Length: 327
Image (cartoon, rainbow, N blue to C red; front, top):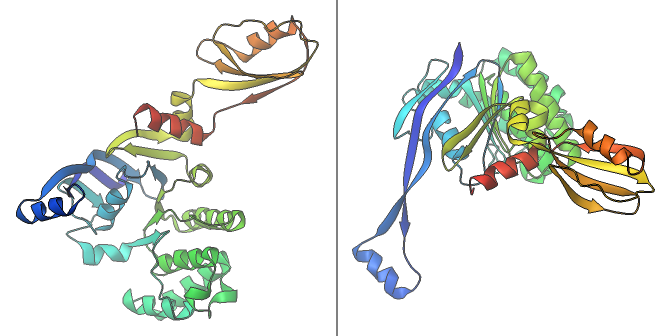
């Protein structure tokens, strides 16, 4: 049974335009020109309870607009959203008690006061009982390792420390759904690993349903196996990571290290990318060729010392998907 249901969701914005110059500025006083931008165009999907879903797309694809509608901040022009039995916009007061939101570039903490004071204020805002607050706070502090800077003003924290506090703040009221918008943006490698590990643990422990938007494909690969890709407001793909790799990655790179290459053989559906004295890098169309066949052909022309096969990374696959659609 679906925990989150989105049907035929649409959102259009009016974007006003004018040419540069004083004359054009005066013209807009009489008549303003605008164009319609379809930020979200007939998108539908279902998400099960406890699922982690990567929701990705290039800048301007409609990710943030979708998330804002799922959070109840924006009202859709048309379509339906049902999350945990609520309509996010119509039932917003009751609904927001069930969600946690982390925007990587915006803070929900008070800048000039200690972190702990922000947590206490959020306790009152969400009307969390003393018992639940103490229990949740203790667990989150331990998991996120926040002890050292609980009494430090937010403005004095590093970005990694602040993001861990932001995630803690979003989970204090024990929400059923967590929206993570670029949660590791700007973080160093150590902080990224720590945040990813925590997200996995909290999902496993509390069965929190998580929607993750990120331009960092390592976030997506390490946290979820389901991917929803959008572009120009439309859904381009909804499925597993392995599925998108199979569907959009027909080529592999093959590196052959050799001795005494007599001559370079011509092999069908194989492109030479780079050739050096003792090795060659090939691109292989796997839909019409096999690695074993290429190795067999080359073994007739040289002594093969070693081979390395490189699959396309998810970054490369997503890039080609965007490029093919002029995104």
